[in-house]
Image (cartoon, rainbow, N blue to C red; front, side):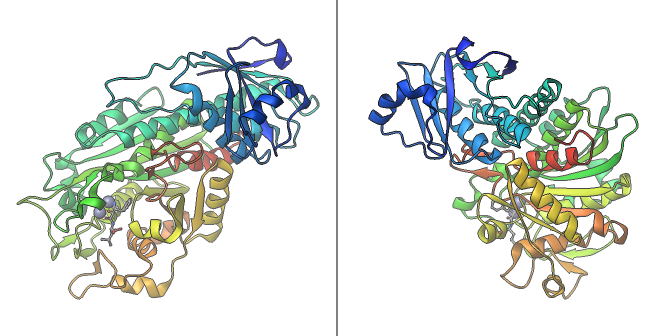
Length: 487
Ligand code: BES
Ligand code: ZN
Ligand code: ZN
């Protein structure tokens, strides 16, 4: 999609379609000519309500407030309404920038077009051709005093890169386990290599040498051998260093503690954490942020078979702790345990974030649309939560406590891989991961359970049915907030 800022009034710009935001149900007198038609179509101007007037080539969409979240969602819904079934090549829109949040609005607009324009057609034999490729943003309604053209161009570029990276993550997650298994995920990671980006892949032999026995046990019954992916982006003179760790279960059947059929379907999405890390690496390197970023992904398939790891096994983790396996479906924490130890040994960073579709309990606890943010550093968690909201994602803090930590004990090993209480499953999983964080890194680490929002089987705002790319926008907001490039 191509975005351009045009220094003309809206009516002077030539485009196939005009998009009009109806803010708080107030119709601009400029479009009074369409009022009768809108009335006839019973258009009320509610948030995300779309009315396409074919006769005047205008698409109206309701927006509750000028807030970015409302603008982003409305534009996405309006874009989705015409993208697959029309020949419109170009759309024009005003800037709606007569608010103090000038650039937030502009960023949200661009994200709305790109995120709402997302389609996953890989497995459809009849693909709809998409004509739409140009957005012209009129300077009309610019707040002249506050406006800097240079800055606006930068904001548009930033928003486009982040939204495209989110779509890139969505594509990976939506891909079937037959087409995306550990080796393929590693190959995909290699395509991100360029001047400042290096990709190192660890195969089973090296994983064994590294002592990543928990990760290897989870992978053992699969015909697809595991990979650990380490992508590093190293700009000149970085201001910070960040490590990102992602759960990349290309399929989670549950293993011998087999999932019931209803729960197994959609488990191609268990690679979402890894796909999110890939999306972030792509965006960070394209934006050339002055931050060194390391992405670690545990790419593994959890299957059944004669060689499967079993409930009752005791495994020795990379950090020397022993873990009694009581449920092979709690495999993500085993993979991440080893991977977190590896990440901390390889790189000493200022912050360590992990992304994982770790627990169904997180979805039960906070709902499908919200990520659970855990760790020891309250201020850091708060920052992640508030920046997530700013980016258009929902996240909430789930605090650890010492009583839940005690529920991970085993009679025969240092730890059990599941808790002995049926309550607080998202937190106990997080506290299991905490066993693999060194004392030195306690305050630097945040665990983000994206089990809910990563994959939702219906459209929600700017998110399509299926993969959402959860975590990408949230983390990009955090990373840009660390730099002068902060929006
Ligand atoms: N990948 C699942 C968690 C999950 C569930 C992600 C639903 C997305 C949607 C994870 O590996 C798992 O199976 N967790 C178990 C843990 C339990 C055995 C302690 C769960 O949540 O049921
Ligand atoms: Zn599982
Ligand atoms: Zn899993």
